[in-house]
Length: 216
Image (cartoon, rainbow, N blue to C red; front, side, top):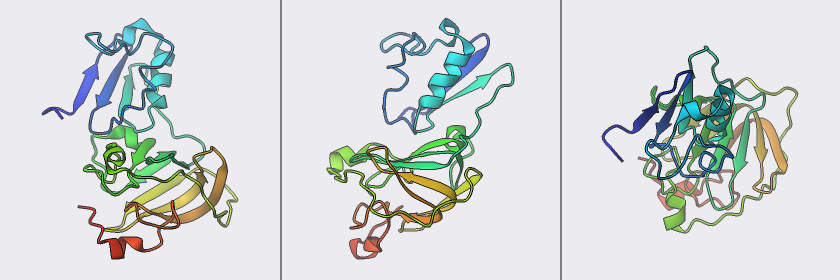
């Protein structure tokens, strides 16, 4: 990581910002069907080659919050209407919505709307994913066996609190999606495993205690 982990790509109408602390190279930017991001080009991102709406769309596809923008018209990103947690196949938890992640730095604006949170226990950037699950050989295919109590409304703030040396505590209207894309669980409070040892993934079952999980 460089001394300055955030990088700015200015344009006439809109600027793009990239935070390498959060980037896990999913590739939504480089695979977009336009010339906004082109690998090997210097600069990598050129906001002026596409319409302003396209810039916003591509940045908001980034599931980790690493990409954000400053639209000079005043248009700003808004949270999705539903708070969701998608359990990735052998990977992190992808969160979208009106997120309030406790301890998130003020200079990480993208994680107010989109975040990838570690569930293997190996990330060096907890609570965020840094792709350490790959080297750690983390295996969980993202099935969800429980239904939850259900919801009577959606949206609103979702508070995410990393419990010291324990799970992620989520409070607020929440929809949990299995890796298959199935809407699996809905409710207003959940404790999700972030040590990688639970036998009831994605939920915590207290295994972090026996495993000696240390978050910091």
